[in-house]
Amino acid sequence: MKPTTSEIVVSNLHLFSNHPVGFDINEGRLDKLQSPHYFINSHFTNAYEWLYKKLGTEQILWTYPILRKPQKMSWNHACTQQKWILEVPLTEILCIIDEGKWHSVLNNSPCYNYDELKNALQIQNPLLNDSQLDKKIDEVITNIPKEKSWDTIFQTPEEINEYSNIIIPFPVHPEWVKDTYVYSTYSISDLESIVECIKEQGVYRCTIDNEQGIQFRKSLEKDLPYYGIKAKVELTQETNQSSKLYVIME
Image (cartoon, rainbow, N blue to C red):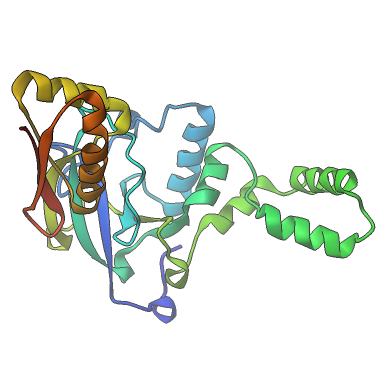
């Protein structure tokens, strides 16, 4: 849960959090009933209620380490978000969650490490064949105390990695905000819409994360010729986090 003084290895965590444009993380109160995740199904609802009870509050914000690699672009041509860059004192962190284990909680399943469980059972029962081992694994999983196992989702600061979810209080203290900007995400599945825009207007432009922009530029340079488009693709860095991407038909 919340780090203790003995656990602190750095004074601040560098984090980011993405939200709809216009959503201010510095003020107001969150309404869980407005969350797109809360009502996905009853298991999700129960998982969030379990977490709220553990933390003693529903006013929480999900953030992620800056070291997290950009997710493979799911690309929705109309998807525009606001990214918040934060520097949060470690003493203000409510908890650090292992993302993989959190998915088990969301699916109302016990948390366990399959490889560790399998290796342990093989050592205990070296004569079991594969079929017998699988049956033994199923038996053990069935008997794992579900909610007790959920407590293992919480990480210490030393365990933070790119798949950690960092939960902080909402609203966010203004001094924690180091930068915020609007950006758009895109994917190859929407390439035809981008191609149509270039053909109709002769130009395409967007604001995008620096690292995503590099990937996007390379993809466009490779893929546009297949659509019969000869264009110049330019990427201009505007801030430490975002760039302007221009595609101009030649």
